[in-house]
Image 1 (cartoon, rainbow, N blue to C red):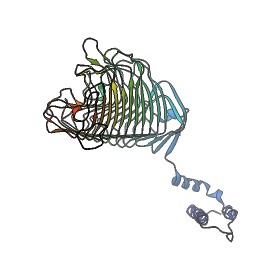
Image 2 (cartoon, helix red, strand yellow):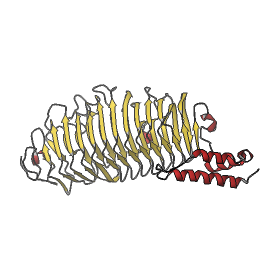
Image 3 (cartoon, rainbow, N blue to C red):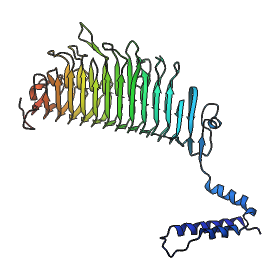
Image 4 (cartoon, rainbow, N blue to C red):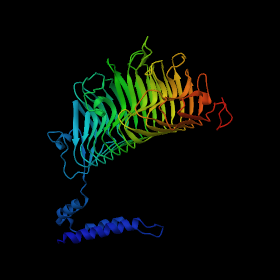
Length: 500
């Protein structure tokens, strides 16, 4: 007896739906449900006559658009250029261990989800070159070769892509001079999110290449995360640990995170740690946890930032300092910048700053509120021998509610360039600075707040200030153009007074 295939399918669906409907009801002692009876009814139908048709129909209805790739079969799904060529696939699931003797790049140029919570890639990089790609939950172990660019995750003009919950361990102990070591690179596109990743990198210090376009990420050959021309970029809830692995002569530089030419970025709720154990005391190095170039409307909020190095020095006989370890560096122009609620700790043996911003490349406007900052380094008499919580060479800045402690590790010297909040290094144009309601402690220095004479319409008011020899209003040095009012000492029993 041969039934029409649509009738058979309708009967099957009806019986399955009936079982499901019964299962969803409240069952009590009076219910009599015998699933075996359903199976007996099905067995009465001559399934063999229509099995091919039923299977065909079911496959059309339930075909999955995901595939699982292993070390044994993944190469079948990539073309000669290394790009994924699976058609009609929404999700690629990687399973098991993937290893390559030489660094190998897998490319994806179609919108899909890539997952692999139980997959580990050793000496592989991923290149994402299409919109709306999600990369989630993969372990990368990279022993970077020398003589090549090495990027673990490269996002190129891929809007709306998400890089989340991956674990990356990246190790480069060679100088790899002239080549890029960027652990994660994002260039172009918009609305890219990097979130919930755990990144540990061992990277060589390298000289900045000013033959490349400036400002851009391409001048900096080494970085944990590098972002260029990617609007509305989000970097959230990541742990980024960058360790210096090799010292070079010249101007050895290392960025944990660098972003350039990207409007509307949000960097929030991350732990960013940069440690340099290879630079010796007295040698110069240039470390930046977050390095920002010409990014309008960027927000840097609620990050835990820590830099530690023995590097940096005061050059004997010159009082000039070399080296830096800046928590956040910003180069204008930039407007609409917010730096808020961050915990910044930085320590070295040369010039140093928790936040450093300047307007040489264009007008700058920013708000800095609610941050806790600790800075220690060696200050000298030369203007470049600067140790400060914030150096603000900006056209407009509003600084409020920050708690700042600065320790000049050198012996106290009158006129040493040690400050809590400062504009002490000349930059163009007039400067409007509003320094309100901050708490500043300066060790081995006199000016908790120092502003050069080119500040106009500026004020330092209602701050709690203490330096080595002064407190309250007396700990402010700003000349006649700065309004100095109601700054008070830590032991004052009032919150809006001018006691010394």
